Amino acid sequence: MSVEALPSPVLAGSPAAFPAGFVWGAATAAYQIEGAVAEGGRTPSIWDTFSRIPGKVDNGDTGDTALEHYHRYREDVALMASLGLGAYRFSLAWPRIVPGGRGPVNEIGLDFYDRLVDELLAAGVDPVATLYHWDLPQQLEDEGGWTNRATAERFAEYAAVAAARLGDRVSLWTTLNEPWCSAFLGYGNGIHAPGRTSPVEALTAHHHLLLAHGLGTAALRSELPSDAQVALTLNLAAVRTLTDDPADAEAARRIDGLANRIFLDPVFHGRYPADVLADTAHVTDWSFVRDGDLAEISRPIDALGINYYTPTVVAADDPDNPAVRQDGHAGDISPWPADRGVRFLPAEGGRTAMGWPVDADGLYELLIRLRDDLPGVPLMVTENGAAYDDHPDENGEVHDPERIAYLHGHLDAVRRAIADGTPVNGYFVWSLLDNFEWAFGYGKRFGIVRVDFEDQRRIPKDSARWYAEVMRTGRLPEEAGH
Image (cartoon, rainbow, N blue to C red; front, side, top):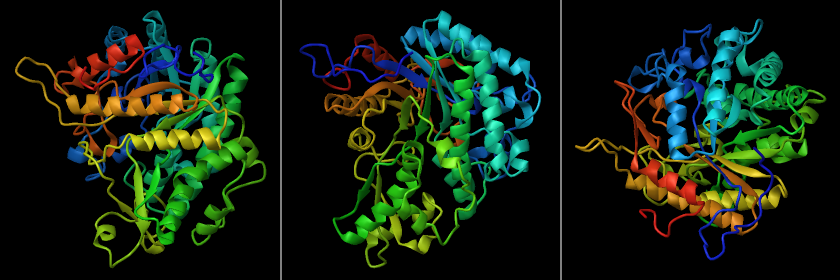
């Protein structure tokens, strides 16, 4: 599957049409759906450990069983084919392939992904593999996790193993999914595994994750066919300000630095932003960055994946402004202490079940920015979707008009960005299935397919049928419900 830049929409007379060759898909992640955490030679990940700490995950939920995808993958692939998915973005479980994160390869684990990839190809669905979606082997965490430079080296070894086995059939690989979450939520404020709360560890983990991306890219290139493609997926923020006040603009600059430029500059320009280094000088001297690291991190990639759900609105910390006081502080997104002068505010618009504002213009703004800042870099929307409290009706059907409206608005934002010259060549809805939603457990449903967690039945929602029609025609209906 190629992710080269596509031409502008070509279906004459249809302003809502997408380019020919646009990739339509859906996404999941290993720990969220596979289950079978102690089967087939898999060893514990940081999420197995974290989810067992009282109070860390809603309702004490774990991914032990999840959706039993490890055993039900054939059923799930048949479901993908019935919907007409062109591609399926899934993650490999590092502790299933290289138990403990180092040492002997687990052939049973690789056999599972062999079977999954073959099943996808037989169903006409392109496999898109992500190497790391947050399930670090616990043994590596015990040795320092992402604060330990050696973890990046272990990641490259794992990447080479996976590519050597699956690279003859998987043509698009992503190294990391949302390293911002791994670093800042996992090591900064502790709401994700492994649950550490250290600003310096968050920045150290951030750098070693990017180093793992660079080393992993080199490892993939060494094993993959020359026409295979390597990508990175980031959850970049569409940062807005409360007002035009210079103090609010300064708050936005800081958050843009830690949410966006701290990733984009090293990956695409081989440097860290000078203002971010200055802003974080009170936290660390960045001595964990060694000679040659940025050259590794900035190895060329073939595409950038973008995950987007809601915009980020910030303001200067003003104790006299009630609107500024009502929301969180900079610790919610960054390693800065709360008194560093940044506050987060609620955006306008309706809310999803996550409490996240619905604002598709944020996705358009982000894509246009990337068009201008990274000219010629192919983009893919690798996650976009919404959680709502949907339930089966008396006939067992799931009507989710809010999700359809959300997807319609965000796909229209993608279409508009393409029409304005942005090289977006694919879209993956999050998620194919209701699943284990990290610290929220099973209480938040993002799937276009409902899963009954008692008996594991899969029930396509109205949004699944709506999305199937969009994929089939390559165009958006004029209204979300049609």
